[in-house]
Image (cartoon, rainbow, N blue to C red):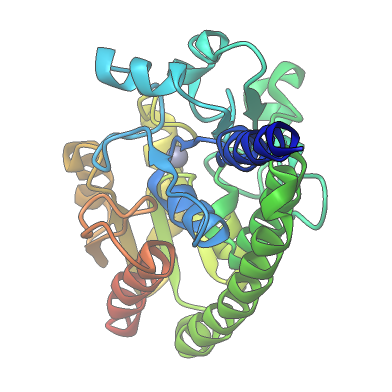
Length: 310
Ligand SMILES: [Zn+2]
């Protein structure tokens, strides 16, 4: 009898010990800082996701250092936008350990606004400029619409709930709370942008389609569709012609890319104001509410410039 209860006690110790180690929360690795911030809001109280890129690193064509590659090999769940944006990472996602989940933006099927890439002069027919071949390529900068960020956290919570059922309710409750905060953020930015909604601007690269559409803004065009391809003189001339038809326009450059590329356009548009906007928060401090601060910083810089137009 004594030995049975002793065995039961030992068994109890094993039963208590094993589930804890088996149920260790999945190690989540997230490529891009704004998405990392959203993911951290979902895993709060369970685990801390790892950020893959340096915050100054443009996701376009980003390569990975040996340290970053090591992070990849430790992931249970890799959250990234996908090969449409992260061409460098698309070659490396195969380095994930066996059984790790490769989770890309187009997996987030519920409730996401998704737009195709568009030509530099937005309303021009895409096929006329780029040929039928590129038509239908999705614009990957989805996170700049806070409503997409809402869909992202809800979908990520479901993915995590499947990987880690013991913490499913925590993930879901976190995502629901974040969804509410993101709704408040959307309303705050929408109110801030309301007075300048019709003021025209031109962006360096077309990373702001989701943001522009979310808030109904008046973007005239982009100097380049993706930063991998430098601007052509024809695009510069067409954008300048369009910009010179309005009383004033903001030309927006980004900290990841050389301001030099905007200079031919700035020189051809005497009524332009230059300002900087940053879609990934590369100049902001890491930490709490990073996603919201990226959107607020972007909106502050854009609205400051647009308010000064006639
Ligand atoms: Zn981009």
